[in-house]
Length: 228
Image (cartoon, rainbow, N blue to C red):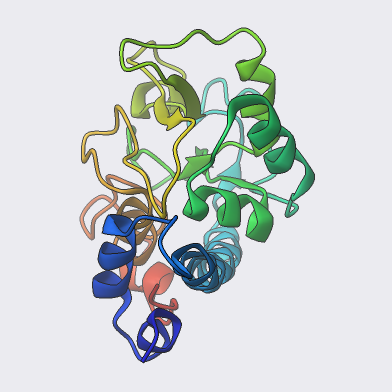
């Protein structure tokens, strides 16, 4: 049984953990990595579309910041899939983790920043910048002590609320392999594990729980989402 078949049979975490440890240069490893990542990110994109619909139905208003006094204007929560900018980023920087490239090819980007009258501050909504944003940042980026470029994938939880905070959640590039650790986010988790925690268990918000959701039942956001 290959990795994709096992993944389809429900071994999501085990398969992705094994692929993360695998050398992409060995045999057909890269092909198997891409097959699993493409399916995983198709499900992530499906789930994000559902979350946007459900949040909208519950009165959530999308904006640049989660600040009811100055939201920074209306924003689009989902961007179109993009294969061009990731390819350009690879040409400029080098290898991209397979999960990140497949994410952009499935949905481009996501920004669930916004406001709801029942939601408290600092819920850390899901944001993943489009590849084009990293392409622009890479023009002036300098290598860090590890010899890699740390490019921003998302504002931190404070900046999402229009408050001065810490470093943006970032990816170290170039980086070959299946998945990557999301830098400067409190979990310091692999990207797929971060997406699982935020989407499947917290309805698109890193700090949302049943109590914080107020008049919006957390189950109303997460019920029926596709596991990945």
